[in-house]
Length: 84
Image (cartoon, rainbow, N blue to C red; front, side):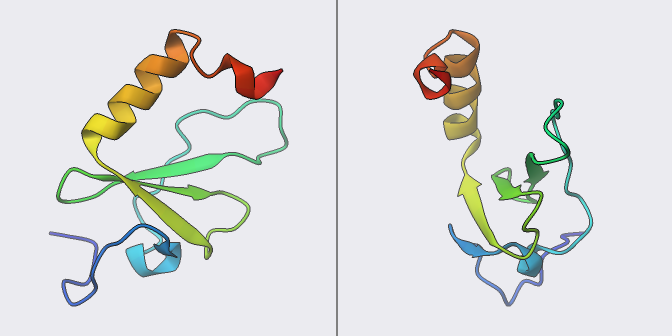
């Protein structure tokens, strides 16, 4: 069963609370005091991402292809410039 109310349109930047409280996961967390991203796989295969310290804030919605490209690029070092 879909966790999202079917009357609500899922869109980029929507309030994360509208996606519900169940199903969010912290795929990685380091020694940053719990400040990290949380992700949820949606019923249609897209992925929602929110900031763990602002669970009612905006959710960014990505396709599987977009998330795959990001993760593979990060693994290959293409996002290292963000850390320097």
